[in-house]
Image (cartoon, rainbow, N blue to C red; front, top):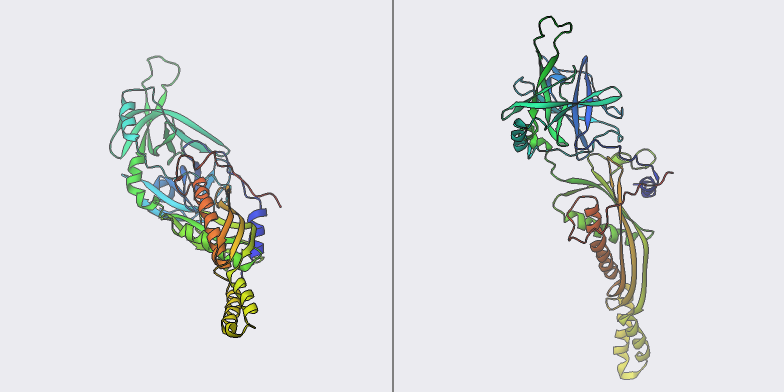
Length: 421
């Protein structure tokens, strides 16, 4: 049996790391593969962290490196083995994408970039040398970038003239703040020194870059995310029937969204103490809590029937009718009278937490009004109204759906991190 109390305590009390500072548009990484070194960039796909780099960083004579470690600019490193998703070690292509297990602090929070808009910018850069490309290098403890000037391009690659350090194969190349591709190879040019010059002529490098839009054409089937996976914990209440109705209403909303995939919490998600510790492929964790749920009965037609029946039961010719009304009243109360009228006050707090970044988004659903019917029907209707009010706004805050209208979000989403224990 799931230890629900432990799950709630975990979700609301554990400290979730804050997102690290982002370099705009890309997340560079340093790669050590056996004795080889290189650079690449990280992409978040759901709960996975994918690394894109040059294939020869990972492969030597078609043999994959046995030990691969990926480190971000904040010195957080991968753990365990990697999984190659696509490799084209052919020197005419020379790119690879692999998944890696990383700690939550690891800088892997940016989505895949398709390189759209790169082609016209390249055309423009051919005639304007003031437009600079930047080749990012990531040495231990420091990140730097070298400017480059475009000298040529074709459908798959482009070439830059730049000064580039060794061991930077796979380096992300940035143009206008966005990824333009990865460094594949470097060739050196040495200018001729003037006769009698005391110093040697300067050397420059021509680097070949695999275009980001070409990478997208080759990798779009891998990078396409079929949907956002939500680990669905449930909505909690002290009363079982309230919990069940609240959980069912929230589940129905998410199941109605075409790009959301729900995963129920199972024992595989829990540690030995019953805390939620394993998230699988989940992108978000959803949990809710009923803060207030008051139902006050105003009128009951069955109760009136019972009262009238008790009065009429002793009156001669009306005895049978009185007994019938009395029985109806008793049955009506037993099955929760559909003619009952309730005053309902309901407040439910819903939270979505991003598994990787630790950012939490919270929205309050509330309902106050008069409802007629059996108690469970009344509660279900009120809960559905709370869901309809809160969950579309919550999903929009978390970036899962588009706001219903321009006024759906009246302010920037506030990041709410659970308090420290």
